[in-house]
Structures are given as C-alpha cells and as structure tokens.
Length: 114
Image 1: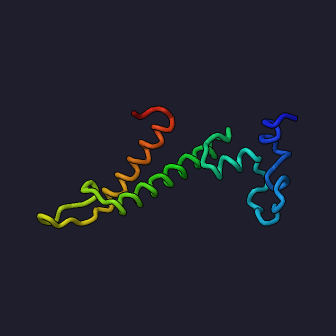
Image 2: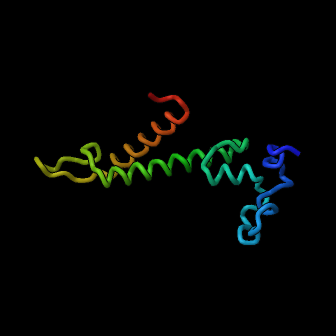
Image 3: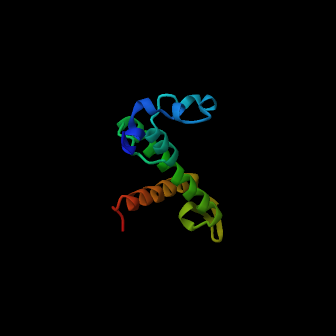
C-alpha cells in the first residue's frame, strides 16, 4: 500500500491510527487526509461538501485576523466622521472590509490577485 493510499483509505481512519483515539471520538470515520485537511484548513479532501465548509472556515479565520489588525491599526476606511476630528467605529464597514481583505488573500493564494 502506497503512502497516498494509506492517507485516503477509510480503513486507516484517524481514530484507528491515533494513539489518543479515545480522547478524540469525533475523528472516527475520518481518513488521515480528511483530518489533516480540516486541521490545516486546506479544502482538498475530495468531498465537495466538506471542502466547502473548510473554505468557509478559512475565509472566516482570515477575516477575523484582518479585523483584529484593523482594530489595532485603525484606518478611516472603518470609521464614520461624526464631526471634524471625531471618528466613530462603523461595525458594518469594519466587517465588510475584513471580508474583502480575506477574499483578496484567498484569491492571491490561488494566483488570482495581483
């Protein structure tokens, strides 16, 4: 059996291959490849529904990190001007901008952004 077969064969599930399987009951039935793809947020399991969930989780993770960075280093893109010199956070702008940054990061990763 080749290494690829070992990673994708349901007979080699994470629970059977992992020493602490009794501590991770949710891994039963996952192949080693599926488990790794979930943990690494890589949508390459070969199961469309699972890959879609992984893509959504990766996008949310990147948007959250972008939001944290914007809060730590604010720009006017995420504020409303209440009066000259006074700014107020705009949560909708912050969220939209965070997801736009996440989408750009994902597109760049796939080679689609410049």
